[in-house]
Amino acid sequence: RRGAQPKVVALGGGMGLSASLAALRRITGDLTAVVTVADDGGSSGRLRDELGVLPPGDLRKALAALCGDDDWGQTWARVIQHRFQSQGDLHEHAVGNLLIVALWEQLGDHVQALDLVGKLLGAHGRVLPMSAVPLELQALVRGHDPERPDEVDTVRGQATVALTPGEVQSVHLVPSDPPAVPEAVDAVLDADWVVLGPGSWFSSVIPHLLVPDLLDALVETKARRVLSLNLAPQPGETEGFSPQRHLEVLGRHAPKLALDVVLADEAAVPDRDSLTDAAKRFGAAVELAPVARTDGTPRHDPELLAAAYDRIFRMHGRIGPWR
Image (tube, rainbow, N blue to C red):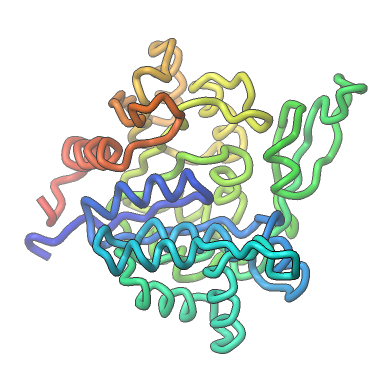
């Protein structure tokens, strides 16, 4: 493997995972995305309800993020992200969602179908679902009903959890012990680096830690593990959260999980000492780097995030065969 690149596995969902993948594909050609399958809103939710399939939306977004910057890649990225606008049943359905579901029905194999879509797009990496069964996210939320601010209710559905006005206490999956996709487990165990986050904390990041076989792989892997923090709290789901509180709730859901590096944007960390203390509980060092876009929005810049990941892989990694 002399001269080879690091094997990297990125876990998450939605726009957070897309940001990470858009950065990571710039620094390694050996990249696998492991994507949450608990989405129940929008086009994905409609397809899930009607056909009983995995929600394809986050998988589609990951594939689009892995498309290259050439004309072929950018054209296909736009095509699969395109949403129909009509007065009929196709309204707001994404082309990529329909393509993925059609291949699942044709091939009867989630992984084979996603690999085929990736090949069509010229994707710079592989996309896998974290589980082969559709999952329901449930949360215990304090104050979900503003008229009962002190009561804790069970809130069902990823879309509802993400927008709750209350304070999320914890999340769990239904079924509680979903089977992990074997290829996802193998990728984590075989990786040089595993990247978790950024993204919606309770609905995209933590769910990976609630799939027993996937959590076991994350605990047992010899890969180094980096946690990428969000640039700002998410309205509803993590309203008012400090960077260190993100780590605290992660630890409550996966107390055996160890980390090597916690990556954050310096401008998003008002109290570095508190974040350093929270990271030490995972055995992790804190790396601060400018990773935000310069337009003032809380979005990651792919080039800056790529530079941060590249530096972390070189400074904190073992002397790997890619060096």
